[in-house]
Image (cartoon, rainbow, N blue to C red; front, side, top):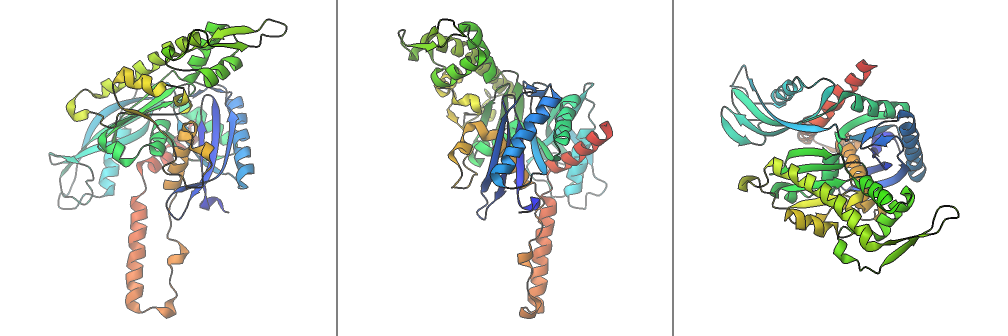
Length: 443
């Protein structure tokens, strides 16, 4: 199969790196062809801090995905996260020279490009410019301005900003691993695409992706992204606390958390004890499950409260901005026992665990539909959606069997399709071009 027929998402996380190969099937669902994962060694809290080790981990994951799928991986769509990510709201406008012409894609692009010229703090770069609502000549709440008349085009934007050096390091790792950078996207947006339904985005929902090094938050309302944040705590801090609190090694602490950990201390009885083998020649250690869940509970409460502060910052308490669909938890950390109940208790919002199975083909491996792979599946979806969908050969019709009228009709259909494809060139793609130029000029 040629590279054009399939796409690849690469999730560079703090605990694991996942490469996932897939394509769109005839029902518009994502068919996973192969997956590769490796331990992430050079990433701390979502930021690359050891280039050599990260390149090795990427190559291991990609090699495994190639072996599983039998395909050669050339281009990947990669996610960006980390504690350096911040977001802001910004309004901007353009005055059109001729208000008699309808507003087209170029006008919207011009307005978006104007936002990219915003002056940022030293060392920061704009990652995404996401339009919220448009205003035309003072008339507000317009979601799609194309095709309308007006002299002044105005919009509110959600602007995501990150550190130039961190973004550049990710680009360097991809290049040095011998891969091409197809696109780059914010990880909370990728996870949101994988686990949220359109109804939830309309009603208002907060997606909380609890990873190893960071907890990512994306808030949607009326189908539009409203707020994003990256909180620099994740599952690793819980493991670290267990390690310190019980005086055991990290590997054992991680196993304890996965097998016996609970976010709700009242759950365990005092006499429930787990025995851990001591280090070489030392006595085994006995740990009560009640103590274990007390340690986990304290740290999880801290993470959830930070998330809730961000949700309040967005304005959840205002009637108009209420998140009716509540909270969706995803990522490896969301698999912690009783976490859903604890989040509901702290925030008072409906909560569910988000599985990335909605967009996957029915025969997909059950393991891939785990919250652990939400970001990777989201990045694969981004890769599939942003693939330039040319007009396929099947739509060409043999001339001798058709009348001139049919040919004209078919031509106009194909032209319309090409136009639609052209119009589908998203802001993300434009950003990729900008990002590639930025990487090249940085060398």
